[in-house]
Length: 396
View (cartoon, rainbow, N blue to C red):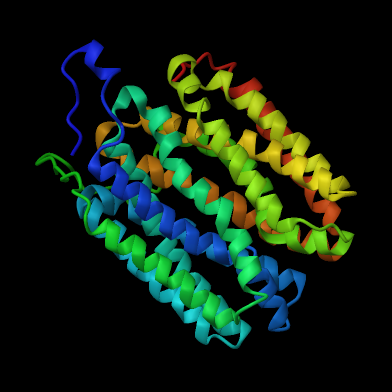
């Protein structure tokens, strides 16, 4: 467990890369690799099983809503049952559910397994983010969460491209079993971590029945919702949109996207730690807005990859900044709940986006998805300017 320094000078020099931080980093990489490989291939699998665009949206959305519903319980369990219990449980459920895809031959069964996978994802990602938060020195939390996020970003650099490439070489069943193996690797590394002990106060009362979010995390969570609403269109329908337009390079899109996320996180976390979120949010949101407009246009591979770079720079800066903001403001015994609130908004944005975009695709076309997503980014910018900045809240 990370020991906090005793002086102000030592706080700035506390190291981020401890043994346990490295293990949570690697575990997060493997679970995200297994997940990212399914991200662009599940819609194709649904199509192969005879599903429509609406069914693609429902199957993607049901996963995120399943994760969303379990996160409040995960947040409470992190503070009562411990980090390790929640994290290992989530990873185990994820491995079993992804492996079960290999034996799925109907859309009904696929929906059921997606619900189970969402539960595992909700537990594991809420716990993983909280464990990382425990291990990062508070004064370097923006920087540390940026580094932690790189594990998922590197997986994003290779996962979707690897999944799309392998699906043309091996069967879907073999692909899903391979994803389960990567999840198993994550579980093995997670077993090596020394988790923070939960100190239950003797005066602590039972949580309220409707205690499903951490109020101090609401502002960053709402902003994240409108950002990830747009992300739902990328994750679910971009391969189909590019195919319809005859634009090649969809595998490269995910690679460029991830590379620019990594570039962004080499400096954005330090900017957040030194100057706060107002120097991160607006520039990053504008980049994501530009990306959505480019994807709606999408005349060529060059524009596709330019959109990937803009989205990568913007999302790579905004996501860890909002997460650090959410966690920093939470009381010490509510860090897990703050992470649950944060990731719940992520799930809600992707889930609603995927389902709504499925309807938009059936009513209009794929380009309309990205115009709608651009509108969502505008809403996030307006909320930030007229709610967050107007509140004159002290920057996290």
